[in-house]
Image (cartoon, rainbow, N blue to C red):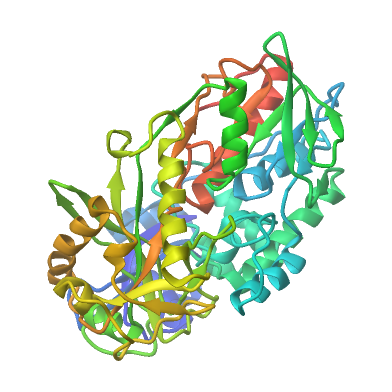
Length: 531
């Protein structure tokens, strides 16, 4: 195979034009191209409105590839590299099957790896299966009661199930393509294998996570929903079992702790047990909404139905703290992400087609332990809770506090929307966000908005909507682990994923879950795994 990079085509191109351009670059007839596989696809809008789609492809050709490469003289052509991840092969069962706590991306892929190795893991998830969970969440969005055990944060697939379903990451890891392949096998579109910014969409993820679970079960694994772990049994510094809320004790000597960033009761349990943890920096802020058309015009310099809904990623470094956008959802919706009674939390999600009228993103301010108003390891967590409860008190319900960007910058309460209608359900309560957000967050946001607007025209348009609070961007604690990925105080306890403080999104959490499962497998045979 020959790899060709930086093939630039118009957004209206077709597959024949891509193959023709590949053949032209190699100096061969189009008929000599036997196979073409897209490796990467991205949008180049640097010379707007002349937007291009950029490809990297691998092609198989008739004839001697080395000779064709030499004769072409193309500097953008080279032999295609061969690099792929091979999961662990089946091995002998341990005396006790491993337990995985949590069935978000880290727990799910840890369980898949253990299942492929023939270890038949037991997964314990406090929330519901995806289908039932979706029904529970929809009732809450419609104004029904919150289920603290099953919501946008807890349940099959974790918080990522109700998101944009982004699968890109800044981590360079050979496991990435394998993970994407598992998503495709479970029902995601093949475009995630090569898009520079792959995403699935919450509507597709609901099916994907169920199919991944079915595969784990077919391999001998077991997933128990509505099963919350409330105790760890530790003897002489070693894990001997876990206890569930139903009073069941499950003997085990290896537990992958993939609890997610919102398992506050588990954080408290671990803290009480003396499991080493530390507070860590994280970020809080608001969700900001603009018209998607505004973003498209700013990013592309015009409208073109052949282009995908545009996204953005912005950052401003201020003396008071870094302000940045996170989890941007083109054509998406702001959702109610509470997991505790009488607390309001926002998040963003979009469907696969990203067809909503608004764009939204988290607009966050970094905070560090020195700023936490509460002392101790869990100080950041308690600060999150305080802000969430203040937001609930603001409206007296799960309606989220909201303010237009113009009113927020002017320091006046909002009484209703302008051109941008908020998408948050079960609804918003208009007013002054400074009654909810601490000064350490509100002030940097107010300073950064005009500066970010210079980077993306319309980002801070007065008619935009700010919905608060966004508090669950990442875990406020890190559960410490050694080079063997075990807790330094509890042998057999393997903290993993976003909740443990080692990941920041679906893909990085999945990678961390896989490497942690490899460590569990390697520990049984004295093998090492890469970190």
